[in-house]
Length: 213
Image (cartoon, rainbow, N blue to C red; front, side, top):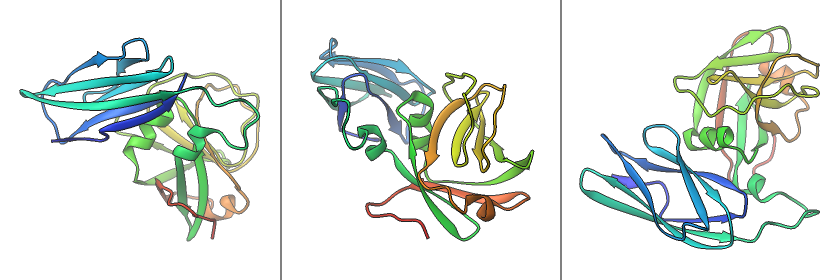
């Protein structure tokens, strides 16, 4: 068994997933120190969502079959507004590949997006719908915080319900409720890459310096 991270750095008000991999049976999570700095909420059988509450350090423990695993969490002050780039977008960058093209994308700082990040890389055959989106029903439910968006934009990645991953390739308005997950940074050409029918789409974590091609 091994945990995803032994050290975690966060900013105040940020949320991240912490997962115990290659485990089976019941996992007991607890905060050994720094309870004012972080809080945890179970999300799935192997994962907790860590919320950074105030600056400081904390230690989170997972117990499974008599073994203990710890993760040290360092919480930094919230990033001032007006910065050149959001911290969570730097940390959760990915690439979406379809039709022989690659599109750099970012995931937002929410529980559903963090759950997607933990599952990467993923490859799906996404189905066509309405001439503006591709969708895929995932095997597991994700956290939901749905609302009706003011508008849907080309390159938006959203969650419909609790398990339907939707990638939009046209702008439009809708009355349906979605949980926002992320966006393609430069969606130019994504409609052509996705095509008019079902298509294989790859979602993977980005390496530094990744560019569209």
